[in-house]
Image 1 (cartoon, rainbow, N blue to C red):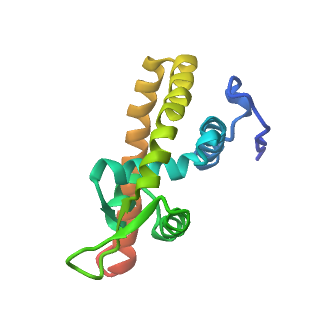
Image 2 (cartoon, rainbow, N blue to C red):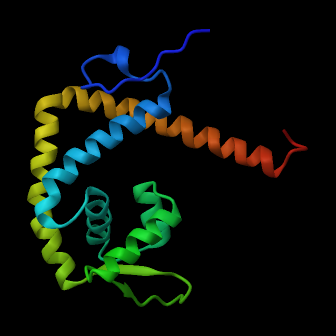
Length: 168
C-alpha cells in the first residue's frame, strides 16, 4: 500500500494536502490562524483571544459552558486562555447567583482592546474573503457545518456505546 506524504503547500495544489481529513483541516486552521494573528498583532491579541473576547462582549457576560459551546473549545484550553486574559486585565469574574458557575465579563481595558482589534480582524476577514471569494466561502461553510455535525454525532454515538456496552 502506497502512502502520499503531505508536503508544505500554498493551498493551490490539492495533491499536496494529506488524505487525512483531520490533518488537512489542522493544516488549514494553522495557516488561517497565523494570517489572522499577524493582522491582529498591533492589538496585542491573538485570534483565539479575540474570539473569546468577542463572544463575551456579545453576551455581556458568559460562563464557561456558554463559551465552550459557542467556540467549540475544550474546558482545559478555555480555562487556560481565560486565566491569561484575566491576568492581563481584559476580563474579570462576574458574580453569579450560583457560586459554582464561573462567569466572565470584559473590563474597561478589555472593551478598549476589543475596539482596537475589531477593525484589524475585519481587515483579515476581508482579505481572506476577497482572495477566496464569498461564494466559495459560503459553500465551504455549508460543507464544514456538515462535517462538524458528522463529527459531533459520531463522537456522541461512540460515547454512548462506551457508557452502555450492553446496548451496542
